[in-house]
Image (tube, rainbow, N blue to C red; front, side, top):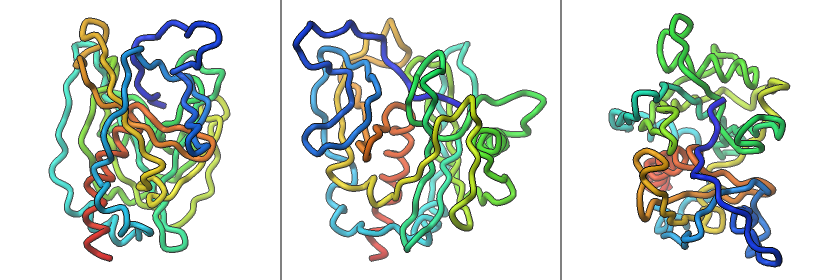
Length: 261
């Protein structure tokens, strides 16, 4: 499993003051209890790229997802430092009641790092084991949640991204499933598996952006005014690399869906 990215740890807030690292969103009661290391200078960001299309996105049928994947440009690849390792994740999708849903996993709180964070199934490319990054994504999804590789139609490859710490260069692959799968989470790597509709992710009250200033000498490829994305779900918050992948995919998908309605 490739965890969400992290900025440098921040000191605890003074007693009696709210903790800015908490992810709950009291305005709508959504969000999880993950500890998010916001810098003290964090500030609100802008609207989602699909803000002008939200009214037309009450459902996201799988046919529209297929059309959007068929129209994906060649993926842009990211490069990190000499110690950056290639990795891949699967974005598993299936349709239910006319709406496409995406499968996500939650890391156990017993993990040595990134406890309780939300991620796609995925992991490091293994030389001698994986023929390609696509094979890595399928293998890891099988190991982590019991997803049969033969049941996955790889419909597209999204832009690669380098995690903030430059530990991993991630290649995301969109996988379409014939229906809701029967999944078995790995007991040591996955605390829970759940799914959420793409139409929910596109709602204005679910997406949120913040702007962070991250010292460039502490993490690779960062600096002032970096956008950090959040999806506040019922009881969970998606952020970091997982949210970055979702934002890129939804930004490409939303105009296709809106044009088909």
